Amino acid sequence: MELVLSMAIGVLAASGIWLLLRPRTFQVIVGLALLSYAVNLFIFSMGRLTVGAPPLMPKGGFVNPTAYADPLPQSLVLTAIVISFATTALFLVVMIASRGVTGTDHVDGKERET
Image 1 (cartoon, one colour):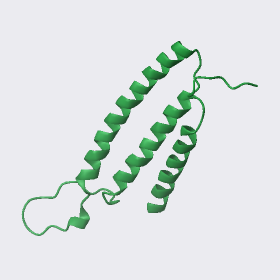
Image 2 (cartoon, one colour; image 1 turned 120 degrees about the vertical axis):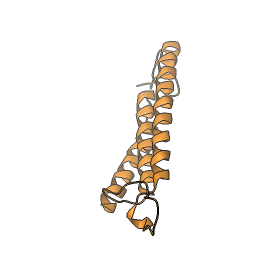
Image 3 (cartoon, one colour; image 1 turned 180 degrees about the vertical axis):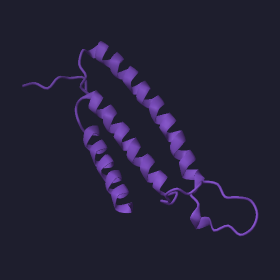
């Protein structure tokens, strides 16, 4: 399971970085989204990979902390999802405004000469 998760994080990060280097603004936005998904998965995996374990410990007695998931990375990922959704919406609005002003969707504002 760790191998699959680490490969998924690597593929998402590599695809996101590759799309960030593209000349079109929509590809840059999709690259930022993929990179944020990779970071979210990485943070989520830091809370121990336990299947079917509750995130909270019961009261009283001795409790084995390795049998439970860490709730802090889960809350950080939830917050990061909300923030990335808001920034993606902002980037899309700025992209639409930039296309209206410049007439192109290239990052530098110039069409490639062929």
